Amino acid sequence: MMQNPGRLWTCMLTAFIFVATADTIEAAEILIDCSAVKGRLRALHGVNNGPLNFGDTIDVSQSWRELAIPHTRLHDSEWPRPDIVDIHAVFPQLLADAKDPANYRFALTDDYLKPIVAAGSAIVYRLGESIEHTPHKHFVHPPKDVDQWAEICLGIIRHYNHGWAEGFKYNIKYWEIWNEPENRPAMWTGTDEQYFKLYTTAAKKIKAQYPDLKVGGPAAGATGKIVDGRFVPIEFLNQFITHLKREQVPLDFFSWHTYTNDPFKYRPKAAGIRRWLDEHGFEKAEIHLNEWNYLPDNDWGPTSRQTSPQERTKWYDRMGGMEGAAFAACVLSDLQDAPVDVANMFTGDTNPFGLFTRYGVPRKNFYAFKAFAMMMTTPQRIQATTIVREGATMLVATDQQRKVVQVMLSNYSAKVDQFDLKLHKLQLEEGATWELLTLDDKHDLIWTQRGDVQGDEMEVRIKLSAPGVALLRIKANIKPQ
Image (cartoon, rainbow, N blue to C red; front, top):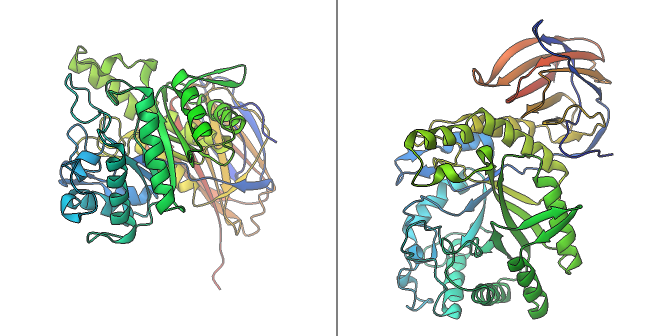
């Protein structure tokens, strides 16, 4: 039974761990029944963009494989001067024959997608253009011929899914039509109606030729707000969903974005969007939160040209540092109980918003994703009912054989820095060993404690100040055969 979103949920452990000091405040006590296995963890740690950066001079594929990223969305790829993925990059002469492979420039995008697929990640291909912050807009205009634009989209699908034009059979399932058309003029210089026509034409043509594919959008950046538990959308979205319903336009997934400093904002918003979609007859439409990230102080101001380089650096350092890491870990935990089908943090590359520095060094938020990826190796979730503290989350799981138990504790802003876990019914008959991995200002998810476990119960004290993340791993001893 779920209780109170945005709180710490308990789950499981073993042994006696003492990682505290005498000067800490009162600890949060958590009771855990390790036999309460219910449901599975969901792989919601997708990202935007791929492991190749700086024109193939930086490749973070090895780190990507550590994360086992489930879905990679392609948007603002190799920004700020993208020459891949975007419609104009793949098909430079927009009015040329869309059925002639000679008019496509696939090679650069081919090179970009290959390591994503090699890393085992599924692709969400955004059909459209990247954002333009320049005073003069070059590519974010409504196409002069929407039917031609849709034919270009079909050519891209043929290339990557059906081997056309010396292409591939990647079986890309998700195709998103444009990005943030309400974000004007940076992402769209046209009207609402022009976007609705673009979406309608492309979605119907894609589904007519490839009915098994999933089309969606609008990748809205401005969505609306939650009032008394209900989603109140902006007028653009009201008109969009009304248009789709009236014209019987397919919407296989509804995509949206939110940047915030509140990691517990996503779950209630997703629930509100789910209810809103259902009320409009789109019960089968998936929900894709395909841009999210930590927004320091909930303020975009430091990204402006007027901000000093020093202040801008501090802002991005906070986004990718421990604040952003604890935020990400809380989001990934809290989304487990949200009606979200696919989630993609922006970004998984060397973009200033990303998991790596411009030179490919993993940032603190990378290790939050790594902790969650480690949790996914034990996908059997343990549900618990103890509420711990506001500003923190806990995720606990085991494997199918009940040989490994893992607990991810994330402290974003809780006023307590000690967590006492009391675990029961461990069911590790041969005993076990444990290790505690810590992610904080001094540690990059490395072990800070180890020990042995005996018996069926365990008491654990974990010291974890905000912002911080801890991963407790308990592994049963296995006797040699």
